[in-house]
Length: 315
Image 1 (cartoon, rainbow, N blue to C red):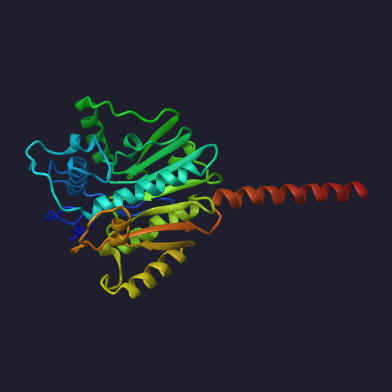
Image 2: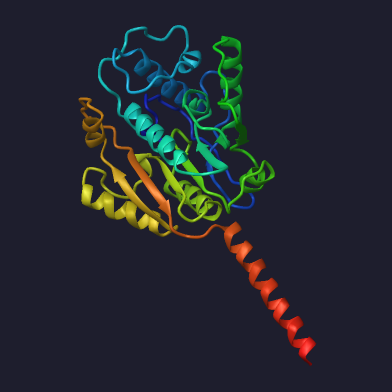
């Protein structure tokens, strides 16, 4: 049936989303084919945008997203939702973590967003200059979102000194596409996942493997893991923590699970979790990236060659 629990608003999807794999990293994720307004990826992205729009209209919102309303259908309910939705809590946590982390990095910064195609963080966050931003998301949804933003006239602009690239999820080689646009695995990076169409545990493991290869040691990965990919009873917190620790550590990450209710209390908000079982996390890369390993390999080779030349001179 697909991972409908990952969607902020549940839609019945009478189809199985297809999967696409990149040739090099074999990143397999949902790429359900467009079928007009019934495309499940478009519906999920629109539902998330609707929640951000509703949160923006609340008397004391967690965050402001002045662009989300551009994606919401005109016939959507106009009443403001009073209860705080956990998706919005996760959005606020990810926002804060991204802003705090980029503020600690000197020089060029790299921000990689794995999204549903309607993520507005590059426009709405007060990001510092010298950031290379990548949005990896379904091409069809991203194109629709870009057209709606342009047609709305809301004036969405990138922060000064930032460069933005969209990398289609359907790219045959996402790593190569990023490197062609200037991504460097020997520089610090921050990765965020929210709304990205991860449908199975195997899908998420492929995402982790890709980030583990690309991210410099010490880089952060923050986001929401859809509950439907978990191989444990999400209600049993000890099992969940052990399972998540094992999953992330297998790919070289140290992870911390963030409690939604605890974050809500720290934010001064009342919150009832209900049946929203996504896992909010922040993880640190403990391994060296492929680029770092290659740089060291070349340096060792250079030193070895110089040693050989000196040996010949002595002879």
